[in-house]
Amino acid sequence: MEYRKIVLGAFLLLFMTVSSGCSLITKNTYVRGYLPIIPKPERPAIPTITKSDLDTKPKETATKLVNSVKDLQTYARQLEVGVDKYNDFATEENNKTDKIVGISK
Image (cartoon, rainbow, N blue to C red):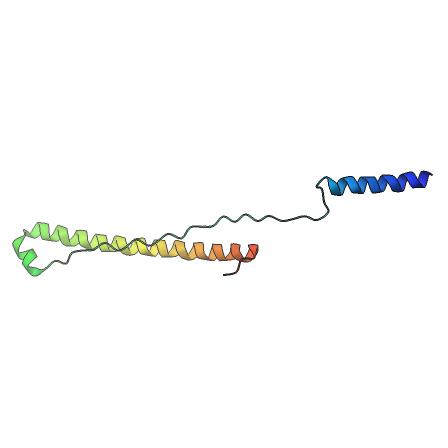
């Protein structure tokens, strides 16, 4: 009789555990924080300066214009390099996450 109560209690406990949602099988849920890829901005259109433009403008203005164009070109190159470096990093990180999660492209 005592043995019967223990077995019945064990089955009852097992049934309550399984039916209450506490199952023995776990399910993993993955959340991936995807890094956005930044679109590279178009390089600004920089006007060309002809010799006639330089002849008709004062020398100071021409020098400032040439320097500002050079600065703008340098800035555009630096911006492109920065965006490319970030995009390479983000692509690598996204690929690592995809491998962990099991997403194949």
